[in-house]
Image (cartoon, rainbow over all chains, first blue to last red; front, side, top):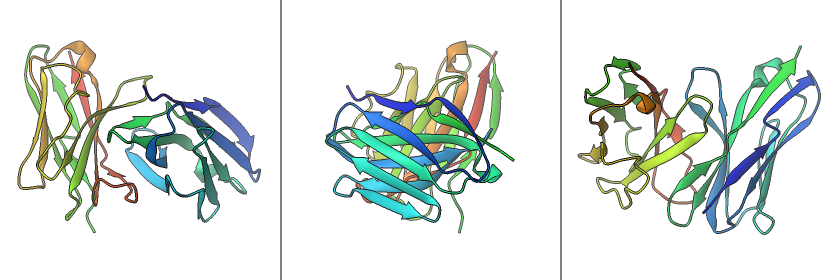
Length: 111
Length: 115
């Protein structure tokens, strides 16, 4: 059974710092991995999607990597800003078409 | 363009009543997903549709839950004889197709409170 774990559960960093969020999964037979952000009381916003054949994706200050063999993904945020404060979720799409989410990392950027 | 919309945004119901939640996906998106997010819990995958067909309903929490999709567009999630543990935010997402290359886009959710 696929399990997705995100570490740390919460993180506070000063504005301007670079940071890394971690996601690990137990079954490497995935179609893709997607990173989302969720603001309080809101739905999810897609950040980056990495297909199983890809190693990384970049969008602006965000870079996500995928290492299927070790069951890991990282989300790198460069030059963090207070507006980056949110909960970040990773989700894997299994080969059985089910999508499993981690419980998220609550990020707080200190002004 | 319009994103995924869900209605109602909030629903308070008495235990034992039936509720119906609606999702309007992005126009042209053939894949549609339902999730549940309970307080303090992660997102729980419930069911997905490719077109009007749901290949696997095993993610639905109990037989009180059912979902349908008609015309390859609007979907409804119905919860019969609601229980307090059904209280959660129900999220819907859609993607162009159910394939590895396509991102999911989420609606704002329906917050269900069972009293």
